[in-house]
Length: 444
Ligand code: GLY
Ligand code: MN
Ligand code: MN
Image (cartoon, rainbow, N blue to C red; front, side):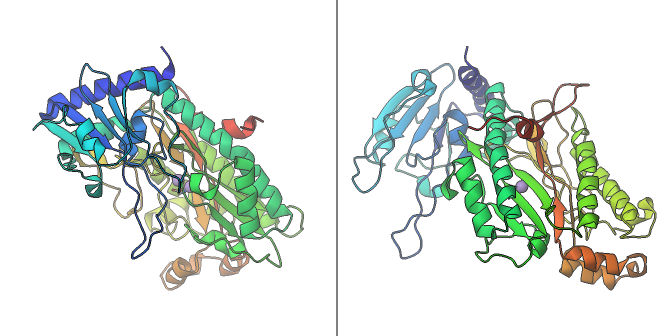
């Protein structure tokens, strides 16, 4: 059986079990609708329901639906309007077509008729409220969603192939972006170089590229792409991914301008961070509590700060007193898949509940124990963020900080290194999708 058909069979099994356990007989999923700017006729970029693209590799298909019944082929209601203003979805093609019962509709409202025979009083309808049609009103039952969201944490072999490919698509684009940085390009120039090399347009990216030069590297989710060329290009942080059949990669690299002298301190800090990041990646193991990897990242940050002479405290005291937090003020990573921040990271069990964050670590996005087949990011950072440094300077720990070093390094903004990592079976080392992709010369 092909990987896709195998994936579909797994989803069928998961859905059948979830329906039975929660008292439903049918699962109907809406792909979503296009949304418009207020008082305008311009649509926002379409964001498909991740549950829909889990079943079929269709990412640009509003007003489509899928119906799942145990023991039956899924029915895909495929919206393909007659439209001369836009390019309508092309005729259905691909491996999924033979695996489903296909119904093509020309008007959104026709979906209600195309699904009338499958909808019962025990139908779970998963979708946004505004996708509703008469007789097809999303009810999003939480007990059912909990089971599906929990299951989504573990990827099928088909999904891992999509995610390997998404990393391979981004890796050469990261290289091209670095070249543009070394050539003195603006953030906007670098962004364009990334798009060209990835073959993506802005519409295709799994999230808006975070393209930072110099002090901008200190802004965690810096949202602009400055069009002006910097007078000096010292440092470059790029957080950018790619998308393949609806699956994302999420990759960050930080570079220093090696073409100029005088940046040795920051270059050494990046190199030391790279070693610690790879140590953290190696901690991604079946059964490990991801919260412990986050806490390990703080211990490693303390080691870096001490070795670089930035903070003069013992590593234990630094972590104990929270002095690493202003330098590393986000979580160590998250689940990755159909969504960049994939769903289900805080679930206590498959039936729901919340697995707490470690006290004082509010931005951690994954608190579940790791299981073989999960894909997570590992993205430690070390930043010089003026707002947080001001607080540190006003605290009782200020005397332990070398403020001259902080000022010198603040010109570079900060460092983040982010890889996408597959947790494997007991005793097995993790698979690093990102490093493997950089090691492969494949250009897709
Ligand atoms: N690109 C967003 C993140 O790393 O979580
Ligand atoms: Mn990430
Ligand atoms: Mn990222």
